[in-house]
Image 1 (cartoon, rainbow, N blue to C red):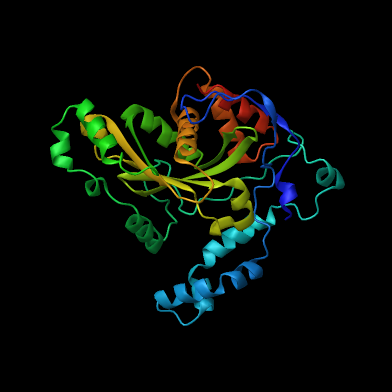
Image 2 (cartoon, one colour):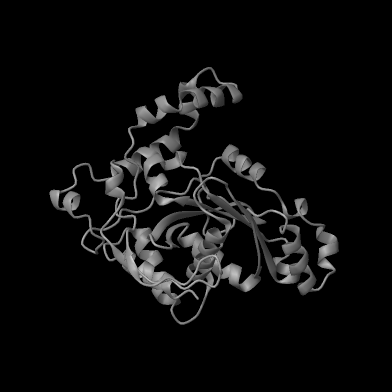
Length: 325
C-alpha cells in the first residue's frame, strides 16, 4: 500500500487542551488518516523474509528446529491474520484512489481481533486463549507490589495514596500515572469488554489531527493493559507494529480503597511525547468512562467502529475530541 493512500483530503479540527503543552488550536485544514481500510496489506511471505532472523531466533528460544515448527505453534494466529487480510479490498475503485474522502458511503471493515481474547466480564482472557499466551502476558506485566507496599498503602487515607503514587513516577519524564475512582474504571472495563479496539485523534499544531489505534488486553484478574500505536504503522505492519505508549491499570486497591492506579510509559523516538500520550488518555477516559450527557453519542461511535458500520464517520470522532477541555 502506498503511503499516499493513508491520507485523506483536509478536515477541520478544533481542539482545546487543558495541558499547557497542547495549546488551544484554531480551526484549520487537517489531514486525517483514513480508517476505512484498517487491514494489513503486506505480503505474508515478504514479512516472513524481512523478519527471518528474528523468527529463527525465537524458534531456537522455544527449543524448536526451525521457523516452520514455530509457524505450526502459532498457526491460529496466522489464520487470524490471513482472515483479516482477506477483508481488505484488493481492487479499490478508481473513485477511491483518486478521491479517498472520509464519508459514510464506504464502511470501515471490522477491526482485527485482539491478540488476547477477552471474556464478557472484561477481566480474564477469553475461553479460547492459549495457556502459553496467557503466561507470556502475565510475565510482561508488573504487579502493583513491584511499585508500592500494598499492606502499608491500605492504611493510608486516599489523598496520601494519590500523592505517593504520583511521587513514585515523578522522576521519569516518559512516565505516565493517574488515580481513577473504581466506579469510573468499572464503566471503562465494561465498555472495553465490548469494544477492545478503537481509534482516537491526536491534535498536532499546524498539522491537524493524527489517528492512533488502541487495544485493550486483560492479562490478569488484577490488571488491564492498553497499547497505543500509530494507525499508519499498524496498517503497514499489522501485528508487528510496535506501540508507542503502554499503560496498565492495577486493581488491587479497587475494592478496599475505591481506587484504581494507572501507570505507563511512552517510548522515546516513537513520535509521541508524554504530554501527547496524556491527551490520548484523556480521550480514552472520555470515550470509555465519562457520563456527561454525550456518552450515548460516543457509545454509538464505538459500536459503529467495532461492527464496521458504514455510518461510522471520522468527522464525528473529531467533533467529540473538540469537546475535551
